Image (tube, rainbow, N blue to C red; front, top):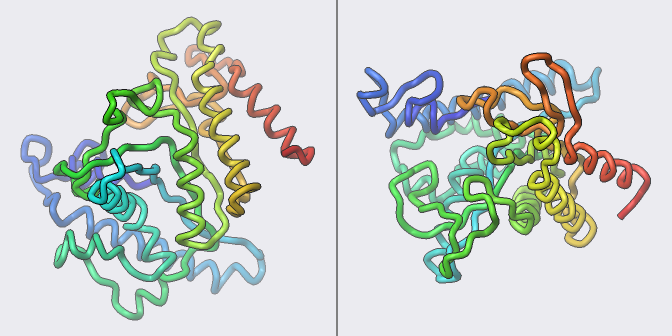
Length: 300
């Protein structure tokens, strides 16, 4: 997994490069993330070509890429905010998806970065374009967008969870439970890239879950509500909107090591006692089992 924002812009994660000299003795945040991203796309594409040429005929497999990206909504329906919400999607999703599925970088990124955005040679583009048999979607939340901000990785768009009237999209301020946005994102990906979708990560971290007694942590009602809403939106996208979704993988089966948070933040539907390694299914696991059984039985 590659985290360009934190790795070669902010310098928080490996390899820890940044223009901020308090964080890193070397690095150029204005150019390196885009060079690294370009190299990742090429590496992916040539690996796919290798598989297709040497192994696909015998194995009959599919090969593709998983991309992380959350839905973005205008802060309110002014033309400017509608525009910048698309800019955010262009950078967060289109940076990798557009070359792979459409054969070019988003026009907004070309305008924003100009000569800092590397260019594909015609030979490279032939390998990159179409180098995924499906769309692998990692997504967690929805952001409200308004013009402003200094983060190129968001398209110079300010993210917020607070509506103009002061209300929030949902209860949790740091990870929004907003199933309508999940349905909108599924539709966007399907209409833009026209390939079937595997939802490869989608989950929720209950606030302060790690500090709760096990008995209380197992009653993860906030996570249950998240999955109830998102699975309902998933079914609506498939059955009502015609989106071709082939699989849904909740994140995650077990509590595990969560990036720089370590073992404090829990995304699992199964509680792990890290002292004993004992596993305890949470209420969210029970809900997902029932949902899966219903789908397997042909339930709508």
